[in-house]
Length: 88
Image 1 (cartoon, rainbow, N blue to C red):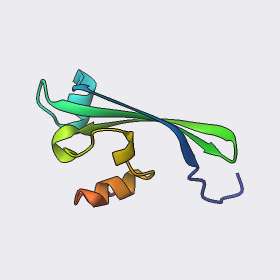
Image 2 (cartoon, one colour):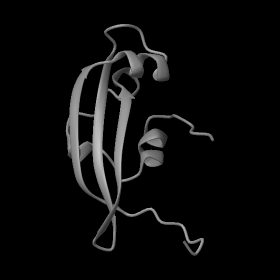
Image 3 (tube, helix red, strand yellow):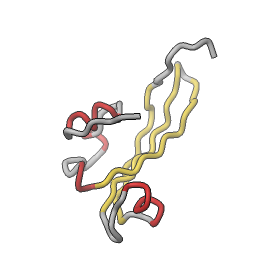
Image 4 (cartoon, rainbow, N blue to C red):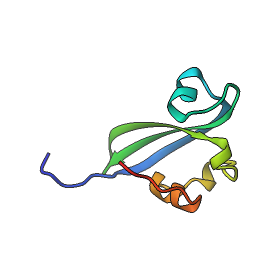
């Protein structure tokens, strides 16, 4: 770890759609039965895998996501496209 930022490249993306689990309901402040989008991506640096990313998104905030081609490489870009400001 030399202090350089590593973002990597998503090499595989899978989407699924369903109702929020209890954990997703708590973390995303959703009601029972709320629809969510689940995204799983493997990121690599060079050709070396270094991150398995799993993301749950409230469907109400991202209604136009229908397939992998409608998802940008960076979550920040996806949020910005939908008028969502991310903070730490």
